[in-house]
Image (tube, rainbow, N blue to C red; front, top):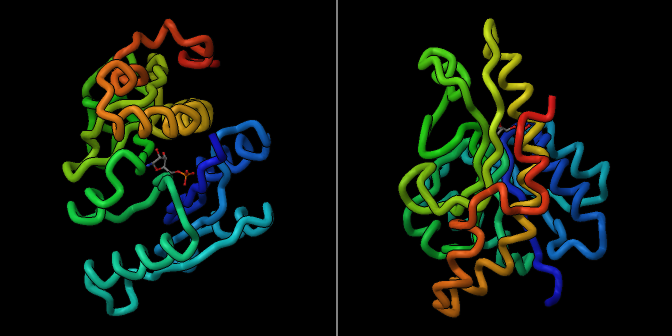
Length: 223
Ligand code: GRF
């Protein structure tokens, strides 16, 4: 299978983007990062992408654009660059059902919590307030309902007594950087299964217990 052409959408520092770029430097990795798009011109991740010689584009959502206009501009950039798969990585903008449906099974996101727990913002603070003992991160396919699509990979992180929001966030971020490249590796195969309507292939990445994966050593608190 030829390497899939990936665009990463960011709004900020882009540390997950950097982890994907690093993984895709391996020529045997099934995806190549060909483009980074930010909706904010000042996103720090743009400089990191450029330093890695990845093409960047800014589709500024604030330039008087309504949502459909913004998404039309985004779609045009994606088509011009013949993008196969979109990775959302700290992209702080809700996408419409129309846009998401167009990219169904070809758009994934990373969320800093063990979905379906703690959808939305401020996940680390809410996890601490709820007193959970285990927190973590999830990579999932994007569907119109926020933070709700089929799960590709998850990593768990233990919550320690006296944990602060910042400390917990830092440990979760560390596992995010591990699971996002692993998850993106699975997507070309998963998308193929979904397209073919093959139930067993489709189910493979989502249903298999995490401890069966050969890389399950990564899927626990590394600290
Ligand atoms: C990450 O915690 C990610 O899970 C969330 O936004 C944050 C982005 O961080 N969606 P970075 O820009 O990848 O460093």
